[in-house]
Length: 235
Ligand SMILES: [Mg+2]
Image: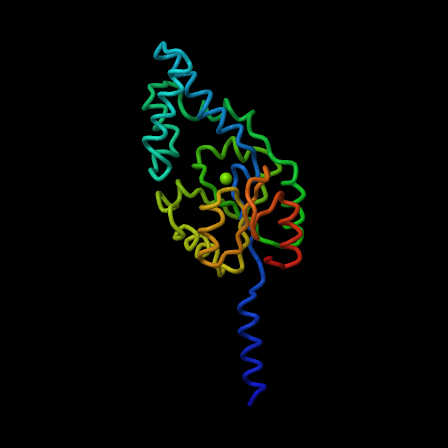
């Protein structure tokens, strides 16, 4: 009955190479540059602390950096602008601060061709970001981004503090109703965007626009991702 085994092997083989149906993107450093975050966390907040406390800017900046280090990004408060504004006694509402810095958000030039090509080819496009939802009004305002995504997962807003391990990725694939190998993800954080999703079988890539990393899953731009997905390959 060798043919039965052959059919079973064939079926298992197809199972193992389930077709890609979902392409998932990180936001900051992948679709938009980090100028918004740099401006907010390293310029705006230290400057306001300097003004409010009457401190030299250098001293205010050191105080702010020490506070960021003390909390650390494993703490959910790290992601909350309202927490930091209150902690530093900055009276402006967070919505106003976020909108004021919207001009800093720049979409990378390879994003539109990538999203258009993948959408036209029928892939489901989703966003999995560590940016809290209140930032999306500015970060996703560009028409290049606003209408492309079937689902936007804000990990700190939707899942609380579970981003530290791969369980967030299990929830993402569950919510999308697919198996991990049907998902390609791309992002710029070696741990969150590559190691964790790879650990459950998602076909993840690290986008490294500066050329700092090497490895089998490192790409330099979204053009490489588009070609790879359209060819159905996972190097
Ligand atoms: Mg990122």
